Length: 214
Image (cartoon, rainbow, N blue to C red):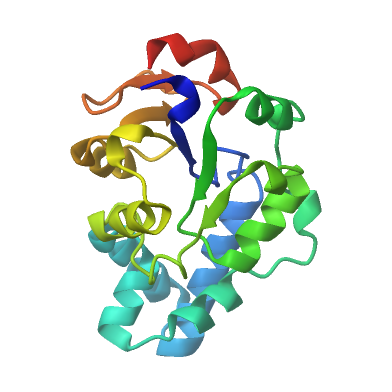
């Protein structure tokens, strides 16, 4: 398969930008407060519930939908509101140039809601460089690492797993991708590389220089 025929699947948070300093703390707090309001529990219990569902299902949302009949659209809207998102997004200016140099189709594959994902891509200045954006709504609220999320994208884009290179910061999500037959790239500054990861990069910006390894 030629490199130009490849399809590059990019996660959003902590792959195309650094969500750790501002965005993830804000979302985690918003989710905790949402659970407090909707379930009528205190801060400690809401934190426990959020973490339990994240560990069990890979997403807090799934646990709330399955056990509390939560409306996923209501949850996602209220937990992804930001007074000044532009100030909170931390990213490298070289991102746009890297994506331009990368041959082949490029798709965003994120568990985040569309309104947030599109806003971040606009701030990064890279929205037009992606051929498609797959968010949690388009995945029928079945998040990574569930195989159904991957299959929905593959069917929707009419592509095969062996065409795809998945760039992501979550080893669990990469494990599903590898099982389906994709090449996997872990974005991490850690030294541990799981067996199902084909390549580890400290930054997605290093991708063009590592094409020969894929």
